[in-house]
Length: 54
Image (cartoon, rainbow, N blue to C red; front, side, top):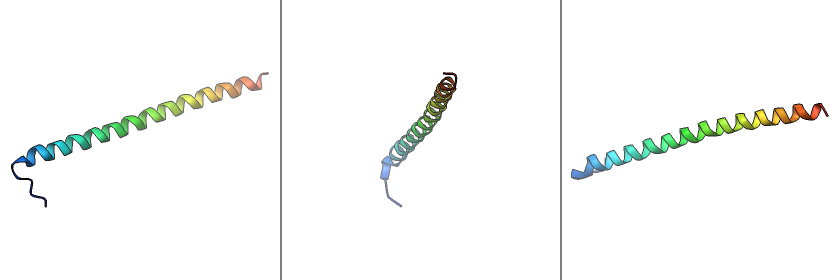
C-alpha cells in the first residue's frame, strides 16, 4: 500500500469526498435523463395522437 505519511487522513478524505461527489453527479444525471426521456415520450405520443385526428 502507498505510504501517505501524516497527510493520509486528508488525502483519503479528499478522495472519498471526490468519489462521493462523482457518484452523486452520475446518479443525478441518470435521473434527469430518465425524466427528460419520459417527457419526450409523452410529447411524442400526444403529437402522434393529434396526427391521427387530422
